[in-house]
Image (cartoon, rainbow, N blue to C red; front, side, top):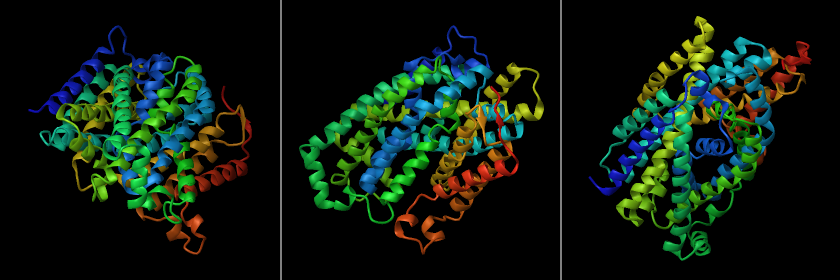
Length: 485
């Protein structure tokens, strides 16, 4: 057993212990389990929301995307910052309504604002379909990270089982409190490791940041500018908008917003959180550094850029720390996804069908659903024949379809009703499903249009049709009324 593996196993044990300790002194009812008793202050809210943003997709994909596509990868930084800016205005009213009505999930919010259980069920199904591939991605990323940084001593399959078991156990026991505690450790470790890698790699291999980009400019000048087609400015801007609008539409990010103690926490975070995107840039810089040092990565191998460069640069003990940081980028957001998914199933699907006696029964069902959801995610993660890239894209486009009707529900007097909201969501997700399953793009659907239009993210079409349908159906059905307080 090498030093790297010892550090990784120690991190797994520490994450489990910390997650279990988080419930001490707390009566773990459904509200405490799913939204932390709405007690988290600015610090915990910061680490929770940062934990949701910096996942294995960012840890591996940020450097890998920069390695393969250059500056186009910066769309991740831009859309994340846009999402944080939107949160300044969006999350405080969401939190106030959630606290007033004791809401636990995103679907609960739609039920109260539109006074409609069927609409809440639709939102729950959309969230559930979106969350599974995202959770699977965390587990697949965890397997890749642990196998690489343990020098192959732990297989991806065994890594997935171990990580999933840790998440499952402490989520069942401690819920959102366990996620918050482990997120604190994860943020400190990830910030330190990624900041060091992003600053050290250019200096070590090129003599500085400027020298590195000069070298890339000579080798691959195409990576330093957006292309005139494909990854063009219109693709870049439209992808930022679609992703930025959807960042708080994921059930787990929405659920964490209901965990705050006060609305002021969101405004403080909206000011500070864009600074966290600097960590993404540093991960991308490692990807740029790998271009000249780890050549030839193609296809899915591009996600290994950061790990391959680190393994050939550092001793085993430091590679173990990198593996520990990557491990936590899977466990922390994965645990929040488990909580959100299990709560959605118990509170908005089971409770609607079987009408439980009380909330305690819903809480028991939610905890019972955690191992069920975990096993489903592990099954998909271990099936190498299943590609989740398309599913993940569909998931992000899915949840973004909830944004128009959520925003439309916030004013006390509004012009969108239940029929309009439901119709808009259905049209939006249907268009997303069709385009993903048929691999359709704006270019394939409208080949005669100018190039800048053909490069627009296809999700924009679904969102546009969603809004038009929502407004048209609401207008035709005579919607203009006051929302529930």
